[in-house]
Image (cartoon, rainbow, N blue to C red):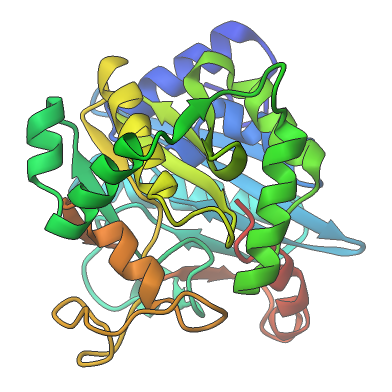
Length: 345
């Protein structure tokens, strides 16, 4: 595996195979890099080998002449406990970043890096808030009845309610299109105050990931009620994007969609389903042990928290964001570039 981006299919397959072997994340996959390269990111990849093991990283760079910022989403992939290999890969990250004239490179690791001591002793500065979710829920993919049994009672009821009320699941085709999903997404974004990409972004996601991606829509009483896009990589599937209608979502359509996506992932050989982020809530304010008050508009994300944790599974917290800083003065100026990366999935 080269330090430079290559376009051969053999390189792509080798990269993903080694990434999966090291327990790496979908956002470090070759196709994710190719996908992001179509939307303003420059992609660079680097790897290093030692003692028969390898470590690898995919870095996304956002350029604003004459500077850039680097971003490593859910990476790098380093064998657990191998600090020597980790330091070798960090040197390559630094070299690539300087070559791209990066002011700094953010690392948002999928698991703790194999370094002991303080961040500064290892060449890091602790970064700001997470770009990707700081916590998520991962559900074990079991047979149908066991999958339902691990859900909270209200969630299980909502899945079954959708079936009883005749909620119909369809994929993009003659009746609906990716554009219809996008219109539903715009409605959701306006209601819950978050940003979205262009319609082309979601269409290209489905085209690039092909059979490893899923887009399903739910129709309730003849009206489009909800939709989701998921993707699978190795033994894990991820709920990437979701949308719902405020008017027609009352019959449990969003719950049924998640159940169907979990079954799709399980039948394809996945063992886990990542619900892609839950908010960090204060105890007694709808937190993990207090689910009595819900709401999902704007900054009040308690409804989202309750929805996702209702499917059961384990809550996973990610390590803090780390920064490799190459210019102290320029780093402050470049924060505007980072803000464009925030939530950029």
